[in-house]
Length: 152
Image 1: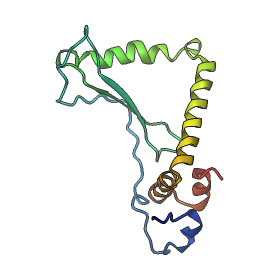
Image 2: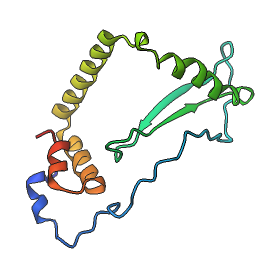
Image 3: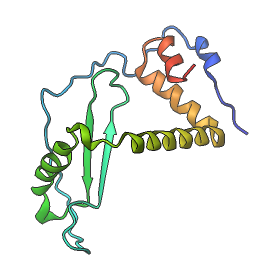
Image 4: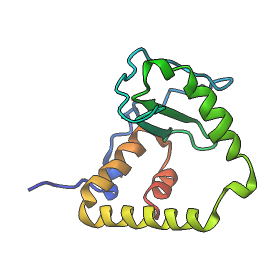
């Protein structure tokens, strides 16, 4: 048995409670930068792979300015210097053009992701609620932001 501490109890949080990151101001980088991590993968099983996984991370606490991190995992040692050029010259440059975006496919993907999130909320509402409450405690400054986060 477990108890879910819902948003209706937030008013019981002591006024003296100081949010962990409330005094921190996000300092945006002045420009894009590339950082090489010295643990590349040398497992080249098929042809010449550039990376075994590409991930994107959008910072949750960034409300207005979009700050993204692209992470490439499993890059072979010999291809480390090719990642930035390949990503910037081919992938990013191509997606700056309007005709590159397939809006129907984007709509389908957004619908699929929204349905997956709704399914997660139905299957494990406790996890979803905890994510919202923890995110609120870490990054939000007022109750209006909590209502937005909870989609109310």
